[in-house]
Length: 106
Image (cartoon, rainbow, N blue to C red):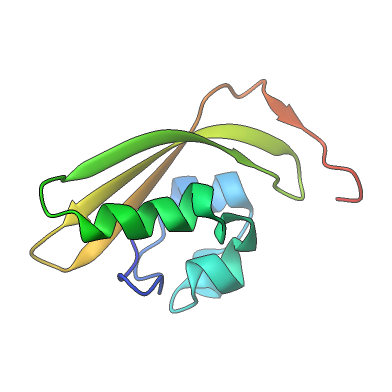
């Protein structure tokens, strides 16, 4: 879960296993700048910013390719607006556990 500015407020065990980042190491950090800089592109951060500007949508779903250092994976991303809290839930689900490939130099 992140604030609209990208600050991570909650990070679950599934994310820890998927990303190999411990919860305490990411809480309070900027998701796009500090934790997952590969998402600081129009296809992810830009898409989230456009989603936040719409008031008629509660969620948005799309596929994204994560070049994790421990192995790249195609994932399904869901943005979910939490209106009461003013935060955004970013759900990441691996599309196929067998679709993990080593990244060159990683």
